[in-house]
Amino acid sequence: MKRIICIGHAALDYIYRIEAFPKVPSKVRALEHVESGGGMAANAAATIARLGGKAELWSRVGDDDAGVKIRAGLRSLGVDVRSVQAFEEGRTSTSAIIVDDAGERLIVGARDINMPSGTSWLPLERIKGAGAVLGDVRWLEGLRVSFARARKEGVPTVFDADLGAREALAEVLELTDYAIFSAPALEDFIPEVEIGEKLKRVLAFGPKHAGVTLGADGYRWMEASGEGHQPGFKVDVVDTTGAGDAFHGAFALALVEGQPIEACARFACAVAAMKCTRIGSRAGLPTRAQVESFLAARN
Image (cartoon, rainbow, N blue to C red; front, side):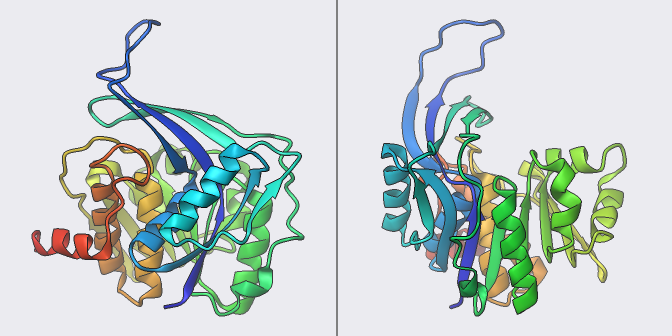
């Protein structure tokens, strides 16, 4: 099995589950609270490792307790964290996440604007021979150089296109093979037209595959050869935090395994749905056997 390199954001999440969001400012008692590793690329790497794949994370944390916890948590899942760099002058990203009984959430994130953005320490030579490079928008400098090197080496790139980098998306898409947007990010990037037209316009930037995650409605995609839709799987939702990250990790793994796009989408939708059955970004991540059992029951 070839390695999948995940580059981007790692964070420590503090998650609180409540009955419902208050209509006016007030004090609310948490029904449950957990501390969990988070971050888009980090969650994707955790998903890949949980499913039996080989994942390594390239990311930045502070030289602090939160950074130690992030690396330890990922290491316990089998993720290669040798290239998670701890910077003395930076503080690790953290998030406070409020989840209601419907599983929907409010995320308040804190990222250190003084975190060094340089990329000279990245082991870019490791991209040669990798199965894929998956990246998010939270560290654009690292994403650019990694995707450029992957393009040079003929390694597929999977882009987690979320909100937060609208101005840079066009440049990144030119280096992307598989562009997977969240629905809000796709609307922000290409507003006021229907989804099919949005995906068609994304393809015009250069990717071979353009897709959008639609929550409970599944996944829709378009390629030059046609388009498709994988409906979502119905589960008892506890927390949707990290569902998109789980989708990206599972999709990249299935892609590296040589599965057709339809199978990649079905597999990734199943993993994302199963993740939502427990609180936190990673507690609900399934094993490969659990996913296969889940899908077999729905054939």
